[in-house]
Structures are given as structure tokens and as C-alpha cells.
Image (cartoon, rainbow, N blue to C red; front, side, top):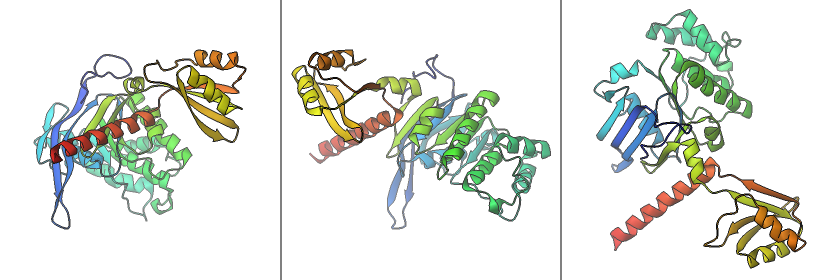
Length: 338
């Protein structure tokens, strides 16, 4: 686990929550033990939006449930707000709000009525209800029946319910699942407002990598119950390599020219002509701005229609991290088999 990474290029952040070598297994319906968390270790920086990424079954939801006290780890330690869990779960619970596995409200009641019932449990009043409804953009739909809400509105009401206690830490499990583009954008803007305007720490488990990249300060990637990457978004993107894409009319000639000078150009034919992804042969540096490739082509009368330097995306980093983790697992299994 990375402990020296920074948020947005600054100093090492203050850690609000820490998982240290947490293990959790469940017994399946067939009586077998299935490992959900296998030495799970991660940090959640204070005041950041943290994206928790991983395929289905990777352990993301189990980790969040362990933090919230919904499951008890077999061993390992979890600390939050300087308190160890689950021993001080009641103290920590007052400072956390969560939406796990979708919202659940009474369909015949209005959104406002549902929240008012929940607010009574937290000692909150009408002002707090009105505040969170306005914050999530449901103030105009507050008196509509919950059964008539769209999926995006239901998700927003779920977030409003998690905010009713005015938490310092908000935990959201797949809040963008099934949302249309407008609803996804609203959710992204809401998460940024909670961080920037209310100083809230937000943990978002999601499969939508592009959205996580847009909203997150910090990313944790989980695979098979283990954290395989835990760092700030700028640091992660800095680890990736840029790609040089060249669009030409004569792909074969361009490939030949570039091969003569130590470049490999992989062709993918699109609707607007040939598109080449240019990579250096082993031992050559990656082309940073494309000027060398452009010079080589134009010297041989091959004139690109377009030349683009594409920076690595979070998706690229994610795929590379998962493949490396899988390769390492396969290597361990092979050695063990030998």
C-alpha cells in the first residue's frame, strides 16, 4: 500500500481511515469458505473524494461494510477518526453516512416524508431535511411520491438520507449505477460540492472509471480481496505512458517508414482513414510530442492528416494494475505447484 503518495501533488495527506491487513471470509451455501478480504490494506485521506475500484466480487462492498460495522472482520485492524473498530463503532457511526446496495424507502410516502421519518432517528428537524433536499437537487420534487421517482432521483434521495446526520465521512456504494448521463453529471457535481463546500471526505465505489477520474482525488484499486494500488490520481496518471496516434491515408507506407527508424505502428482502420498507434521499439524512448515521428514521415512525403499525443487515462492504469496483479497471482500459483 502506498503511504507516501500525495493528494493533488501536495504533502502526504492526513489519513482519516486505515485498513491494515484485514481478512474476511464467508461460508457459501455449499458449505465452502470464500475469501472476500485477503490482507486488505488501504488508506482514506481526510477531505478527499476517494474512488474505490475493482470488478464484481473483488471485495469493495465487503470492505465498506466492515468500515460501517455491518460485517465483522476475521482479523486485522480498521481505524477511523483515530478510533479502532469495531470496539468504538458507536462513536464512529455518528460521524459517518452511507448508501450501500441502493436506497430503500416507503413507496407510498413522499421523498420529504421519508426523510423526515429518518431525521427523527438522528435528532434532525425540518431545516436539516430541507437543506439536504436542496443540496441533492430534490427540493422541487420533495412532495412527490417516492414510487414516482426516477432511478436517478431515488439515488439522490438515498444520498440525502446519508447526509441527514451531517457526517464527516460519506460512503457510497455504486451511486452512479444505472443513471443516465444527466444524472451521472449531477452526482459528480454533488460529490465535489460536498468536498469543497462542506469539507466532507467521500468514498465512492464505482465501475465507471471515467467518472471516478473526473471526481476523485485518490484511487484505490481492489482485486481478489487485496489492494493492488492506493495513490492520488495525479500520481497514478503520472505512472502511465502516453500514446502517439497518427492518422494517415497511406498506412502501409507510414508503417514502413517508421519501422526503418525503430518505431512500431499498429494500424486500426476507422471511418476517417487509417489510424496508427505508434510505439518505440525496445530500447528507444517513447515519443513525447510526436515531432520526431512527424519529421520522419514528411521527409518521405507521407503527410499525416492528424497527429495526437494521448495521455494515459485512469482506465489504462486500472487495466495495467489488474493485469499485473493477475500475472503475479499466476506466477505464485505456478511456483507453488512446482
